[in-house]
Image (cartoon, rainbow, N blue to C red; front, side):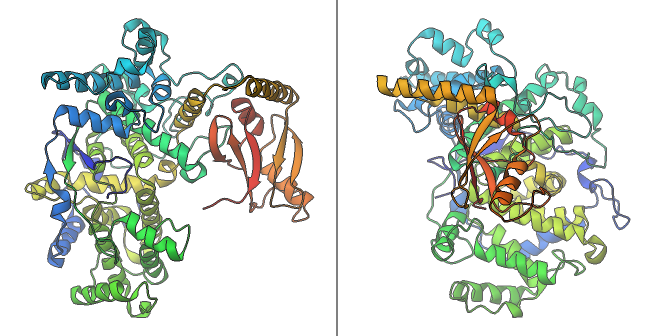
Length: 611
């Protein structure tokens, strides 16, 4: 089955928006190299050359996996609610995720989007002369709770804050990101993206400062800097799997709300089920490949053969002119593919015989032949819909949410690919492969159009697809950083999901712990545990300048493994564990007193990362 939490594979279909790309999608990012040739939508030679090479390879497409069936409105909405962690609103059963808690944390715009989905589902079921399995009102004990959770009345809309819901009095002292406005070089992570497109929502796109700042015909990409919040930057791998699952729920609701504010409608079609290969290398789902790899190498996050191909290219091809562009011999690539299938897992494959152009051909073939696309069947059309967004800033925000939505195997494999492509571009003076050249060649391998209207769709979306690849390569560091507003949302969701204590003894124990924590908070003292070090515990007095790197350096010094200097990157990292977060690895620049204010009930743990 496809590597996605939804029980039935579904995909978006973007309505009437493909192909509306301006000429800004055809130039590399600023500053352009002297080796760059001017690129416009009329300068797509590399793209169409790559399409021709793909067609000449004569690969058999897994059409049986991609047949599309129609979905009525009720099925569409049910699939969306399920993926958003709100399946209990329609299933009549208690789900794995607490839907009530999730609903209570939504912003006004997000709540309105959920209401729209539930109303549409209910109306469609009534047209069938059927009653919904469970009406949304049944989730809540009182009508007032329902009204406030879903924002069904204007009065409650006015009460709901447009930004993220506030924390408790102690937690409200600091937010995940310092208050700021988007500037030409900073992309704010503090407020949900859907809250920043009010002008679009009102139908006055020309009033949007973001769209005015970057003209549609601007050939250069803006330079965005990552914000430096006091609570530290958080990368995807820094959060626990449970928290990233909740990030996915929230991201889907936010992406749908964001697209709706921009006037983009997304609908879903069902993808037919089919049994994919369970062994081998090519045409095998990512999840299956990783399950097989992890039997020999536990903890593998990217398929071994994919990593090996990237490594081969990095060793021999980065400085080769035309790498990725110049195809290898079709017969030799076919022979090497067969040998890989037979010998790779037996460790008998001879990598010395693989030329760099052959490795590039095998790499692209591996991506194309994945039975479920790297960008997923579910979200590939939503990626394509980003082509229609009017400004690079909004495009990046849409891609940011989509990266948060990808299943872990897809996201990790995509990141490995993008890191390699960034290295290719870095050697442009040697290999003559600019950012735009690389983007044009990779795009038809990532955005594979199949079906009756494939050629027409591809011609419409060619420049736009290449532009999206250019954005993914350029902004990958930003895109793999979790926005502050999503982390704040998860904290609120975790707080709302906590069950009340069941016994008086437990209540008294929690009360004593709360009093002790509040006392420590006033004193600014934390206790850090380091079970893998000689000195396993240490009390730390915090002040406004204490950072995570200071605590890590102090443990190194106390255990005789270094000096008080904090310039060296430590092997072990500081984590906040529990409270209103599952687990978060702290950026060394994190101000600990601010974390303590936001999550006063967490534990502090020093340990190695798992990545």
